[in-house]
Amino acid sequence: MTEFFIRRTLQSVLVLFLITLVTFGLIHAAPGGPFQMMLAPGLSPEAMKVQAHNMGLDQPLPLQYLHWLGNLLQGDLGYTFKNHLPIGQVIWPTVENTFVLMGVAWLLTLIIAIPWGIYNSTKEYSLSDQTASFISYIGFAMPTFWFGIILQQIFSIKLDWLPLADMYTMDKEGQLGDLMMHLILPVSVLTLSFLAAYVKYSRSSMMEVLDKDYIRTARAKGVREGKVIYKHALRNALIPVITIVALDLPLLVAGAALTESVFNWPGMGRLFVQMAVAREYSVLMAITLLTAVIVIVGNLIADLLYAVVDPRVQLGKRGGRSA
Image 1 (cartoon, one colour):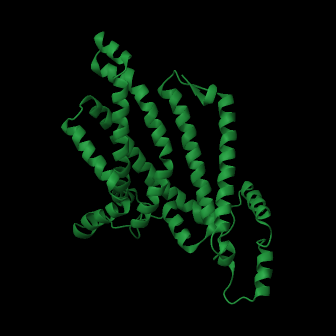
Image 2: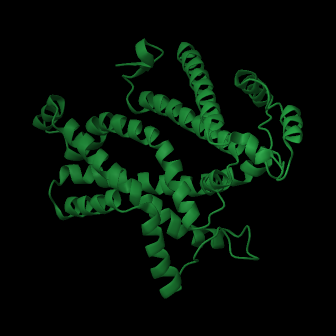
Image 3: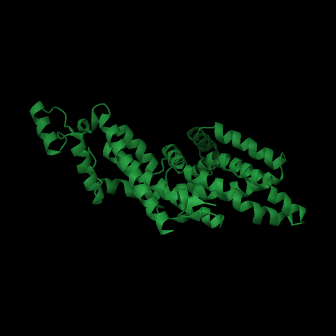
């Protein structure tokens, strides 16, 4: 176990280093680069040179990167270009809001999708199975932003049942009931988009396991069907589902960006879109790095869940897992 954590930690550090390197290079390769965002209008060429020198932007890119990386290792994410605000002060309030939205949508998706997929694997081509397939087609085909606008038109504008946008109603900040009302529409959008995939994955994974010889042997011995499903088959069927869920973390963040923009949710995704339009490259780098950390932690948790779900999986052996 210790060897596994050391190896994964080193791998994670290497991945984060490469992400910072690539992101830094792409941002400075953009037209105009970050320097243009820092310049006050009407500056003379001499004043531009002085300003670039004061900001360290006249140094070679490798030195700029090392300086930025050194500050990052000390917890300094830098400052915004336009208002010169600490980036941490801009990002951290939005991270909590995104975690609330993503967490509720993700948890609801798993609660619905996995049991539904397992049930459909035992009731192939039933009404439930066909309904899940229909919902999956809609979820795969329908853009999240368009679905969000449709829900707003129906439930907020025409029926006036739910709030149109934002995280709280004015003067009701911090009230749980008001937050839950504002969560219904954006969570519905995110849940539908991921429900489509997870029901399919759960169903196909369970059907593959149910076709194994040891399952047929258990049934031939007269083992109850419920015990066959939930004791013998479920553990093996969950392993590929856990993998897919971990790999979908970046997609969840990307989906949240569009959904947050549609519903004016004050989260990290909407902030990323705003900062991209404003060309606040330093904020974009910080959000990209934070997203990478979330993905790496998610994959580490997935590796640990393999051993929890299936005791035959051992950590710390060849490739991190062996059965």
